[in-house]
Image 1 (cartoon, rainbow, N blue to C red):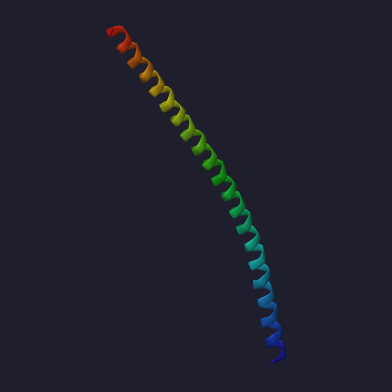
Image 2 (cartoon, helix red, strand yellow):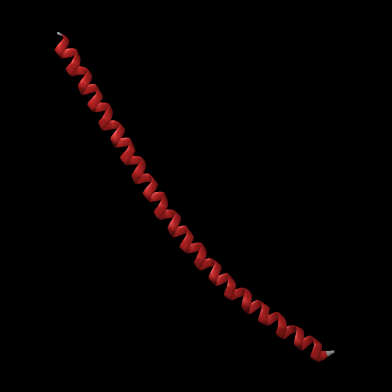
Length: 74
C-alpha cells in the first residue's frame, strides 16, 4: 500500500511540475498577446486621428472653396 501511495505522489508531483511549466508558457503568451494588442490599438488610434485630421482639412478646404465662390459672386 505504501508503494502505491508513493507512486501516486510521484505522479502528482510530475503533473504539478508540468502544470507550472505550462502556466509559465501561457503567461508569456498572454504578455506577448497583450503587447501586440496594445501596438494594434495604438496604430488604430493614429489612423483614426489621421482620418479625423484629413476630414478636418477637407472641410476647411470645402469651406474655403465655398467662401471663394461666395466672394466671386459679389
